[in-house]
Length: 106
Length: 385
Ligand code: HEM
Ligand code: FES
Picture 1 (cartoon, rainbow over the protein chains, first blue to last red):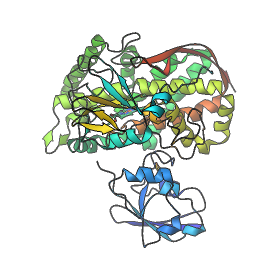
Picture 2 (tube, rainbow over the protein chains, first blue to last red):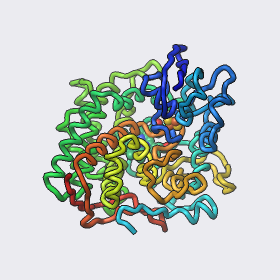
Picture 3 (cartoon, rainbow over the protein chains, first blue to last red):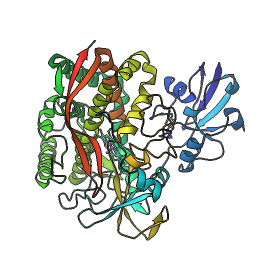
Picture 4 (cartoon, protein in one colour):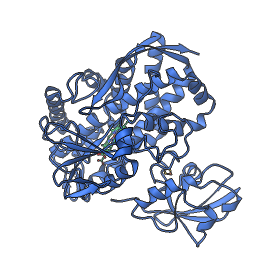
């Protein structure tokens, strides 16, 4: 089980708990604003983009190749970026704080 | 080859050179075929613009059959963003329960009708009426209006055998003119009325802007949705094991829908006009010529998708571009996905298997190459559970 905290674009903090599945699905179930997950988590839409806070990026594992390619074309991506549909919930990520990224503008 | 198979005609050109030249009414097009190049070019709206002469970014070009600019489709950033911000909340309504309930009722009634008949011609007896009735929910218009839209057929600018039907295009323009006048006298809660009352950058939307948005909702969401629905029936008829799987594992539904839309790629490609001499995958493209972003080819790129020509319903990583990529990504995608989710859930609940009796393929002509996009007609027998 893991507790995860989201900071939304309007600086609201919401902490949610999950057992399994992806962080994006957990966020959607709990109505976390700004995590839309339009593609259902198959790494196609980037509407689940978050920045991992507190220098804890490595706890989420590495970006996959496909994830990296998609983030490369995102103006708000940086070295803390993850697509949270690609993060699995596990004890490893308990206590993680994720900031919802700005909407991709073009 | 199974009847539901959608072949990939681009593989050779994609692997060998990454592009393919085609002529279209003396305004040639360089089709961009690789996944990476398609996404990069879609992202690069400065060099590859949408806001050219209305109709020019469509292939075949619609320059000679319409002058109205479609919005936000034929507008570039930064103006594009203002329009997009204006209409986006409306196009997210499919996420609301009340919207889904309305859609579900329509889908159920069409399915019941189909099952009662036993054998249906899916394109005209299911997909077209379903698409039009569902559009009344998206536009928040009276359900009776669907009858007229159904009478327009599967594509608003194309008729069978004529990919550019000028008569049809002016029919749609007349309808939009009439509708705008009606709504001005008698405003309601439909999208026409909402747009007519809207402001952008501190001024009212003009009549032409309203018509430009509305034309797109009639044109963009029509044959795409019809092919998506029809091809799904064909696929499930050929794969009864998938019907069972979707019934037993509803948790893969969303992933399955993304995979089906990747495989079908209902919109083959969309053009852009080049604004400066440049190169795509080492291929020179000249200022004021056209490229096209070939979503259908990118979706079969083996450097990104394992076994690209197979439908893998639980494909977990699936960066398809069926709904486009970048600023212009599809506004109707939420509606299309919601519709498919309800349809698939209900279909596998009530149907055990289906059989394709006969069909006539719909081939898109790409100047020397043909791509199957779906069917002109397909008769299917439904075996209820
Ligand atoms: C399965 C069904 C559909 C597919 C495959 C599809 C595909 C696409 C694609 C590939 C684009 C990008 C075009 C570009 O980059 O130039 C697009 C844009 C668009 N689509 Fe769809 N579409 C579908 C359904 C719909 C529906 C139902 C509607 C609304 C009635 C719709 C409205 C739009 C609009 C308004 C745009 C332009 C967005 C913009 O320019 O910002 N589409 N669609
Ligand atoms: S939900 Fe679409 S990329 Fe994560």
